[in-house]
Length: 618
Image (cartoon, rainbow, N blue to C red; front, side, top):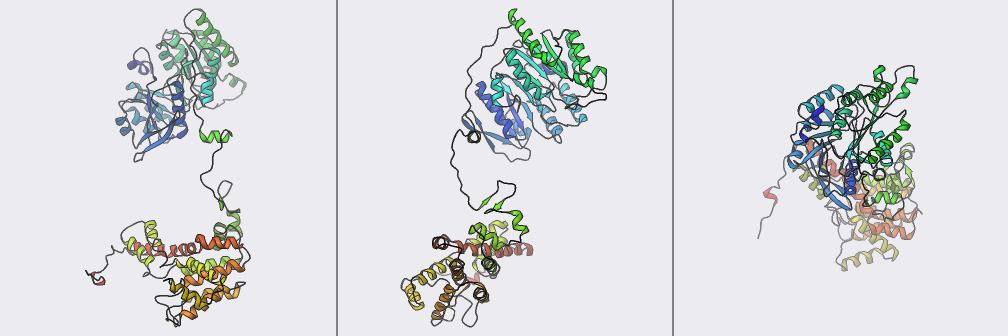
């Protein structure tokens, strides 16, 4: 690759600076946040992530922290759009999967403003990687990777998860530049070596992990040659590995005088000789297929070419320290002074986990828990619900009343749901849902339009009926006194009266519920009271019958009182909060959804009310 990596950058061969900004492809919160935390440590005035490309996105932004300030990073749906909006962002950090890495990387390389592309994904097909390398070479672009963690210029810019956690970055003194250029195949070993360099030298200037695939986008020698042209770098440390021929390009660069700065090198994998057969190590390229691929052969060749090669990996730190100290003694370099590091505020989640702060919760839930192996409804697992044949009524008991209830209780709730699910297309709720569906609206809109009609005049009388019957029974009011008392207040009797049903045309739902209650309930004093009220109101008009709202309200009072499952205070809360109307809302939602779907299935046109059904008057 040679001059392609540094030709247009001048003799400095510098890839990054404190002003470098990146386009981040395929949003990943932690790598982005780590890049910005590094920026803050280094005292950068602007974030290093200029924007995010999320394929298929319609735009928007992602919230992240820059120091103690929350900022919004713009999101674009394509690399082209991102590059157009951020022409100074010349690094492309590609977190695409191996399946789409080729297309997204090639698009970035073909973008005029992009100089450097880091391909994080492992397993990119070799034929695709070769095409990318060929295009990059011919167009003077730089590829780091594939299968890389990225790279870092200390005190200036880092890619993604390079160097790991903040604690490691601070321990390795990466917040300010040192004097060492480092290049390795392994991202994990790079992190370890940054630590070694911080102990044995004044620290790293720039470090690159070229990636462990067989065909890296840039080679060890490419970066060593580049380091030769960066004045701030006084020595070079290289960590290679068995397999492939990459290290020999560095051997040639040393022999040809392209690299004259001190090079301390070690090729890992010397233990491969202990195995009788060929061994594949962690990286795709870490496999010795011949003598020249072996770590021993490479180490010997590097040493013969003039590199400083220790006897073992354990001796690498000592070799680095000795080389660095010699440069200091000779006056070639002056150790970089350390600087004060700004403290990055701890994330709230981390602080809570470490018990550094107390954070009040925003929501309280007592009915369910989804944190365990399987969700629970008031302590009952999903497995138990299914295996023990729980019904919808049992689920209502757990989620609404926070207890298991007798079977006759849960069965009654299921009956209410079945009997109240629908009452034809002409009632206000169904009519609204039908009209909304015919207007082409979505299912949720159709449902909500119907639900919004539920109130004192439609379906919402269950709670009112229960409250009135409860108070009347508690006050020992006779039916006449009860009815006439409401009349004096200008109020109708809730739960009494129907537009269609009458004394001679009873509501079958009321009959079925009443029959069930008298057979299974321990007591029905509230139903008896409601019927006594009906007997009085029928003397006034034939349609003043006990309707289904009044029947459900009275029977729920009987359940609460006679089941022995609730205290007086709990019964008062259930009636006052609005539990009973919830039963009607739940039930009628079934019918409203049915009407909406029916209209869509029939492909009914937009509804317009006929003129002849309107009285136009002044």
